[in-house]
Structure formats: C-alpha cells, structure tokens
Length: 473
Figure 1 (tube, rainbow, N blue to C red):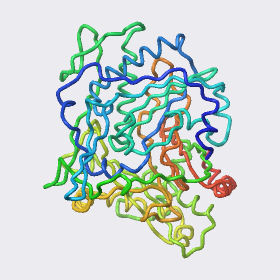
Figure 2 (cartoon, helix red, strand yellow):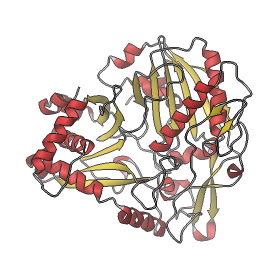
Figure 3 (cartoon, one colour):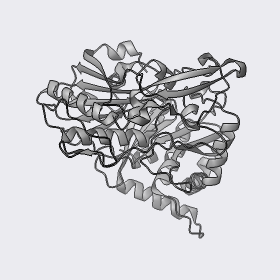
C-alpha cells in the first residue's frame, strides 16, 4: 500500500465540521454500554464503505447543507455515533471499563474534499485505485480505541470532476456491518425527504419517528439491546489498565486489492458443482455463498503454492442475530458477529474437489448455533480479551482466508438524490493478505463482488489461474 501522504497528495480539503444530534433524547444521557464483541474489537480498524456516484449535485453547498441537516436528524436516533469512548480505570483490580459517552463527544465528522480525477480513473483500473483510501477520513489511519479522541462516525464527500464519492467511516467497536448499512440507508431516507433550504427542521423522537408538520419519517428505528451473558454486564471490565497493554497498530505491507465480479450464472454453476460433488443424501444443501467461499479458498490457496502438508483455514464472519432464541432484530444496533472457521491440510483442500471444501465450510457455518454462540460469549466474559489484527496477532494462522461483509446488505439502495451508485468501494481498514470482503453486485439478482487483498505475487498467480478466471470477471 502507498502511504497516506502519497494517497492524499491529490486530495484538497475544502471544509470540515462536526455534527451533533438535532436534540438530545433521554437514553443518550446515560452511558452506552459496550457488549463483549464491541469490546473485543477495540484494537481493530473501523469500518469503511463508500458510494461512487456518476452524478454531481447541482449545487454542492446546498447538497452539503442538506446532508448536515440529515445527519443531525438521523443522529437523534443513532445517538451513540455522536458520542465518544470513555475509559474508567480500576487501579486496584488492574482493570478498565470502556463505554460510550453519547453527550460529550464532538459529534459526527463531515468532510468536504475535491480531487482532480474522473470516474473512469477509478473504474478502469484492474486494481482498486490507491486514492480511494483517502476518500475516508482523508486516509488517516486509526483503530477503534481512538474513538476516545476521534469521531465514532465520519462522512467524507469527495467531488470528482464528473461525479461524487460519499465515504463512511464507522467505529467497529460500536457497530457491525448490519448497523452501518442501517444507518446509511436511514440517512439517505431522511435526506430524500428534506427539501433544499430546509435548515431548522426536526421531528419528535417518538415511537412513530415522525413529525406530521415535517412529514419526516424513518422506516426502521434502531433498537438498543446489547447482549450480555447471564451474570455479566452491563459493566464489563477488561484486564488491562493502560491502552498500550492491548492496542496494537498493524501495517500489512504492500498489497494488491482487486474486485472480482461473479454473475448469478457463475455462482449458480459453482453451487450446482459443489452440491453434485458432495454426493450426500442427508438433505444437506450447499448454499451459493458457501460454494463461492469454498471456490475462493481453493483458488487463493492454489495461488500461494503451499506445501501439501501445510495447514490452511477459511474463516467467515457471521451475523448471529437470527441464530439465537429469542432472535434479535436486524435493527438491533451493535456488533452481533461470530466467526466460523474451516481448517484442513493444503493437500486435502486441493485434492478433494470443490464439493469437499464447500461441505467443510457448510459444516462450520452450521455449527455456529445458539449453544456455540452463547458458549463463546460466556467464555469471553469469564476471561475478557481484545482481539489483535493481522499476522502480528498471537493467534494468527498463516495461509488463511478471511471472508467478511455480506452480499445481502442493501448497498445500492441509498441514493442521496444522485441516482443509483455505480460502485461500492472500501478504504484502507481491515486489509491483510487473504482478506476478502463480499458486496452485492450492482445488477442484483444474486451477483456478488468480492474485494480480494493479496500480496502482489499471489494476486498475479490468481489472475493467471484459468479455473478461477473462468468464473470471475
């Protein structure tokens, strides 16, 4: 990766401000408690997703003013995002408690910037253009723990010569991808209901989330229902006193990042191939995404030229809201994530076919049931820890593939009056060799875009893999 200075050299900052909720609500006056997975992510990177539009607002100042008002209104409901992280220390226990102060933060950061590029500069390159990292928080690198002094939410509007990019950076210790896209969709929903020139409008934060005089509504209200294992919480103490004991900053070194597109037809073929090769009669059905994940795992492992007796693993990040009883709504705000990992020898993975690999992925995903999830969270509560990222982590496993994101998110729904986005792009955050992020394809219909990060020599071999490229475009 190029460094931040090189990436931002073409970016011109026009303005910057901080936006607070239009008014306070009672829940925001209390500490916002962080649940186990929230705290576990304190040393990881924030989430970064953005929308590239092939249209420019007729008046950028009016657009920004309207966006400011939409942010202020939306933050009334997503009030933790306007706050800041606070740590209370317990010296006699050598422990600390981290929570969100929703009132005393600076608010959400809003940046307006320009760059002398056109959309074709971003879209014509095989690799993700290095300037994209500067479309999020100006390329400034942070980890979630930095939310003590930096905004938990940042929105950067970058004008291109023939379009605009809206980049969102959200602290990953406060929310997961489901909550990120819930917020982006809500912000767009509010934006589209405001008229140009609306400056001091507001709505009453009641159950209907509407104000008849303004007719501003949001269709999905965020629910604040953090999960704490029985007998624990809402205060969860970490066994650390100082940040230096658990905060680590990871540089993955030089990577290539490329987005591979998989059409509905290609995915359907992979699913059929995986299920046929499984040859199982126990009503087991390999899903499209499990087949695609297995295919990618095998392809990347083949490109790595590993010895047959080396161990390899494939991890998928899973939303567990619907995997416990009673279930949690998709509108529940926070981190409801768990990992599923399949592990085997390289020789097994490459020698036994797609169906065998897909079945292994299927079994590990299905194993993440309520019992497994509750056991994991209970064990964390008994012995809390903060996860580290990348190959510097003590528990890092080499030769791994980590698949995150989701092709189910409504990423192309938010339009902000600019029409449907032409692409979804991500920033620098959470990148490492073998990291894959899934996004829905723009045309819908079950298509998937996979952003793949690999060391340059491995990416080059993947691009020359005939089987892989016969399915990817």
